[in-house]
Image (cartoon, rainbow, N blue to C red; front, side, top):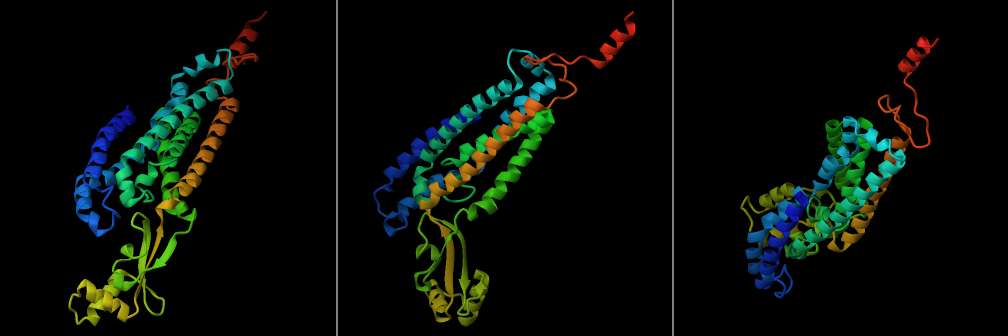
Amino acid sequence: MVLGGLGLFMLVNGLAMHHAYTSLGLDTCGELDGSGCQSQLSVFQQDYARLADQLPHYLMILPGLIGVFVGAPLVARELESGTFRFAWTLARSRVQWIVAKLVLLAVVLTAFALAFSALFTWWYGPFGAITGRMTSSGAYEISGLVFAARTLFGFTLGALLGLLIRRTVPAMAATAAVWAAVVVPSMVWLRPLIQRPITTVGHPAKGPIESSHVPFNADLVSQWFQDADGHHLSYDQVYARVLAANGRTIPTPDQYNALLAQHHYTQWASYQPNTWFWHFQTVEASGYAILAALLAVATVLVCADGRSETDRRIPQPGRTPLPDAHTDTTKRSSAP
């Protein structure tokens, strides 16, 4: 329901946004960072930039919520309510029971997540040309394959924790905590290890580093200054030195760039180009898919081998039900 409502909103809003993009001439004005597009770009961003910037931050938690509200209750609710006893007395094994549950929902959820991701990619298309899709916590998290892979990971994680914890609400809470504990570090620390960012030096006379060497729609990872001796300096440190060299008078942009060149300060930047999008997506999605497969296998093994005191007497196909120890003792003591 939630994904369907969001999909309908993106369809309606996306049609309006794409129409505005073409009617303003942003598809024909040339390079979007050029002077011929700036006025049109300013109008377009004023109308749509806030939504395009904020919506991905909310959508990126949807795979975790699916794990919490679909994966965790999948088995935990049946174990908690006792309805599993009926399923396990049917002519199929526990393995068949849990595999049927996992495979059916996993396929449906993954297909739905891929379709939702494709819809988002279309909706975000105009801003993809402006800002790219490599920015963390942005369009990267919803586009491509990562969104669907995280959905599958969240679902299988919830299913396993529900089977282990056997209580719906605690299993949901544990799923949310573990999902966040895996996803957030992977975004912050593991993703940069997929491929080292490109490092480039800017030309002070050309102004900001973004407009001289870093592509317009690249993800700017970091930027810094270096002095003639190669020491890294912050912007505040450099600005203080430039201000002192200019007699404590605030320099104009031209004066600022000239003073940078005069004192041999260079601007450096590291970035990830937008052309790396599918490489990063494939590597990261593969990692989540492997985790999901391992979690699914673990869920099947635990369901097949683990027997609690509450279900130890449930008859299994081809097995003799285990007798109740108290009942058996009573029968023996009353025998002549």
